[in-house]
Amino acid sequence: MTRSIETTRVASAFFLSGAAALVYQVAWQRLLFVIVGVDTESVTIVVSTFMLGLGLGAVLGGWLADGSPRRILLAFCAFEAGIAAFGLVSVDLMLSTSVLFAGLPRGLAAALSFALLVLPTVCMGATLPMLVAHAYQTSRNIGVSTGTLYFINTLGAALGTLAMGWFLLYWLDLREAVRVAAGLNLLASAVIGVGLIGRPA
Figure: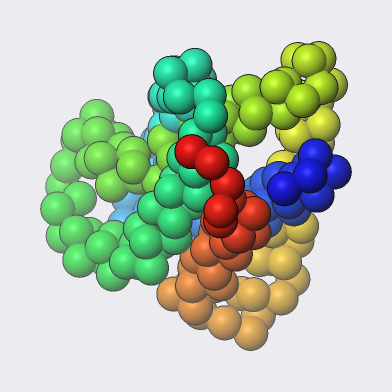
């Protein structure tokens, strides 16, 4: 890929990734609220689960970017595909484990919530530092790389939130909405992956 085409592909993929992430977050929060309950403690459990997973993912993404700088985009494709794979089974997984939450103390409910969502949230959190490291290889400006990618991802997240609130939940059920998000992840992976075909490892 030429630099301009590669930059466009990366921006487009990260936009799609941000949109998918917020569709998942809204859907998974609704499911966990049904399972755990809706009160201040339950909201704290769900939000903290997401934040902890994203934080751990950021550490992992940075480590991967430092260890394999020439395979960052390939790793991004793999992580997006992994998020999609989890997304496709997530609704059934959460519903099937709902019986385990019955009567659990808040601490154990929080631990189980984290166990359910640790894999996809870590993958989500890893994508930003990986792409920042890749963008820095081109711009050599960490502030521009981080700011631009964070803006693009946030824009996608805002669109995902709006789409979920105004359209997806109106026309689709949660399982179908999550499938749309999984499709966005796969599209993001494909947008980058197509550009890697024939590229030296």
